[in-house]
Length: 271
Image (cartoon, rainbow, N blue to C red; front, side, top):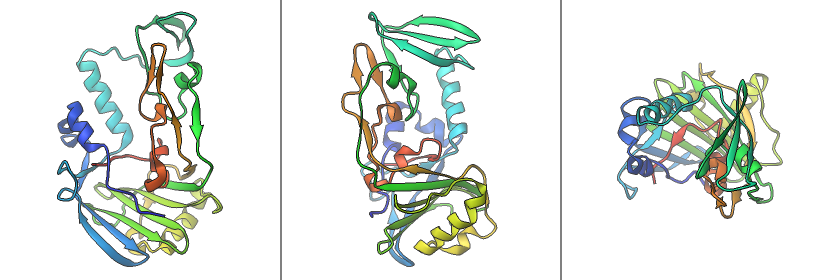
């Protein structure tokens, strides 16, 4: 198993014009990454100096980021409909129309329909995109935690090759961090608060510094996800397009499935 590569996403935020918005409000900058083989430090990497765009990694709390960008979109003229849920998308004629529910069904006609509704995309299912999937291989468990004692400017990535396992701590600032445990799909899954002690013990067994977890407490749910790569070969047709996780445009090979954990991962990583 390889450590999570550094990295992807931050340069794109600058190209989209939201980089300054993120770092000025919700994003925590992580400029270093420590790579370990078990308990042996193999690399203390300066992310800014060793990536093409000379940018740090960004980590943030996903709900806060979503609210920030949604507000910015509204200020730029987008119409935001709270409490709306897509129930159906039909392509009986072009342009496609979308049936939405806000208390009662409503019909909206669009010249182009763009689905950005995460990895379990309803729009993808309704518009007939074919999803492809690799065989199952890896699992990734993760939980957001407060009072983590790891350095806040350094991502921690530990690989235990003999076990085929990996532990990750990605700081978000002010003692909060995303924590992960990656393994083969033969390993028991960790779900729920009752399994948190066992989850932390597996991370320590991989070689993560046990002191980082002392006094830490969960700030979100613990869950395990399949790490098989999924994708849509051509994420556009007949006036409909998919973007982000809806397009299943992810490659979990290096990250052991981090790109698949939409409710778990809270970082944009620089490439």
